[in-house]
Picture 1: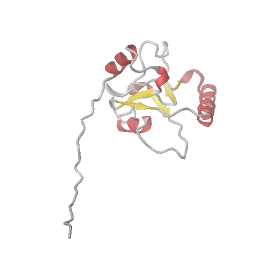
Picture 2: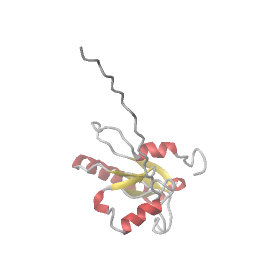
Picture 3: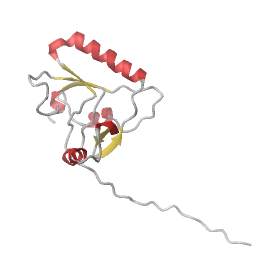
Length: 147
């Protein structure tokens, strides 16, 4: 008779290197990541974004047209562009409504205090994972306190 051996799974802790926005931008400047890579910085991790299919793009375009027509100069409609949440998160939500500013945020990306609304379009069949919406929910908004 062969004695049974019991194998135990051992959890291995692999340390992760979290990046700051400055480090992320330096990587982009050095060519480590590019706009063609479709990545964003979420909570210090470089996360690959899903490809944009036709239904997704059409929905974003419809929302852009709707908000632009309805809000005119009362808000800036920003499409798939960065927002700085903190020193380790610079998501690119599908659509954001921003407080108006004369420079249209050309001198600096908007911060939470500038954001009126963020919309992330998702296919109903998509699996949930790290997203702009979950990060934004963790941050304080103008309605709940200072950023």
